[in-house]
Structure formats: structure tokens, C-alpha cells
Length: 72
Image (cartoon, rainbow, N blue to C red):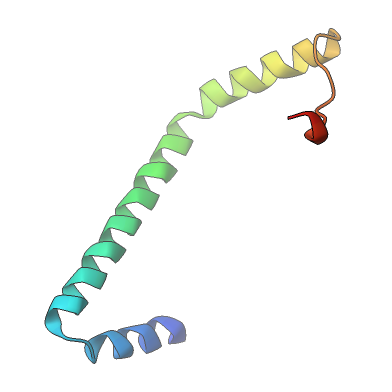
């Protein structure tokens, strides 16, 4: 286990049980969300590639304009 994780777990162990449970639920939710995001990213590669190809084609055809952050 990573040293930082060991330190965090040691600090968590000093908390009341309810607080430990709250932090554990939060961490598990975060890990679950990260897993969902990673899965969505992996399964969207074909659609993202198609959108990127369309954007490159529009740019090559002169149908795009430079982004001006001052005019957003």
C-alpha cells in the first residue's frame, strides 16, 4: 500500500466510527464515479473520433473561426 494511503488510513482510524463510515462512503462513491467515467470514455472513442474528423474537415474547408477568449 502507498505510504500516503497508509497515513490517511491511520488518521481515519482515529475518527469516530460514524465519521469513518462517512469518509468510506464518500471514497467508494468517488471510486465508482471514476470507474463510470473511465468506462464512458472508453466506449465513446468511436463517436469522439467521428466528431474530431468532422471538426478537422470543417477546419480544412475554412468553415471555422479562431477562438477569441476575449469574445466568449
